[in-house]
Amino acid sequence: MLRRHLARWTVVAVLALTCLGAFFGSVSRLGAASGPQDTEKGSLRRQLWYIAFPAANVEMRTLVFRPPGAGPFPLVVINHGSTQDAESRLRLPMQEFDTLALWFVRHGYAVAIPERPGHGRTGGAYLEDQHGCDEADYRSAGFATAASIEVAVSYMRAQPFVRGSDVVIVGQSAGGWGALALASHNPPGVKAVINFGGGRGGHSYDRPNNNCAPDRLVATVREFGSTAHVPTLWIYTENDSYFPPSLSKRMAEEFGLAGGNVEYHLLPSFGLEGHLLAESHDGAEIWGPVVGPFLARLR
Image (cartoon, rainbow, N blue to C red):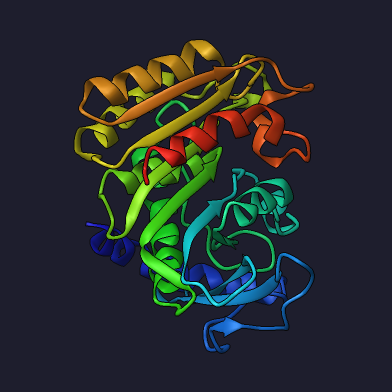
């Protein structure tokens, strides 16, 4: 199904890339050699990679981190959020998720953080548009994000230092929503999904605690849950102003009632904006005691 979905977007991607590439000279055009682009740096072996995404005609800029040794290591693919504003999206710095990456490397995982099409210096067409607010198409947006994640997962599973049967997908905000969409297809090698504040349509009209079309969001996540078999861990906070407790609880309940394997945690308020928990340098004190036992149960 994802292949069919990717095909729907190919024409859009190619046409949009022509305009975007002319305006943003830093677009990672397809044709650059996939794989490592520089040497490993620091104790986390930080390295920039390119991952080809032919349907979008770009190479996704991807940060890779590894524990010491040759592996093979279990793999975590961490996926960033998004915004409907095109200018803001293309000016986004590459998200490194420093604390998340460090935590997983210290627990023996290789980590990949892809920058999806339409974002930052990867550039290219934005495939994840929800198309408006009241009539938002959260399904298409989710599967478009899932397609990018699946490309990254498939490429990294083939690397000799990765244990391809032991993959965890982590997503924050729109990245979490895409991870749940991908979970509905139960991709090979993926053992679990961890969703940090996942969803779409938050801060509608720049108003906190206001979602574009919450009933559509709930209906779509129910669809995801109806075919998802992999365990999913959902982490939200009391002061998430994008997806407040009343909405995140409803989403998790419907995902589970539809048949999805869901473990939902509503954590206490974090900082000024709980939606940013996964990006915070000191968030591991809050989510680590939840994520650690969840992963241990998968072993």
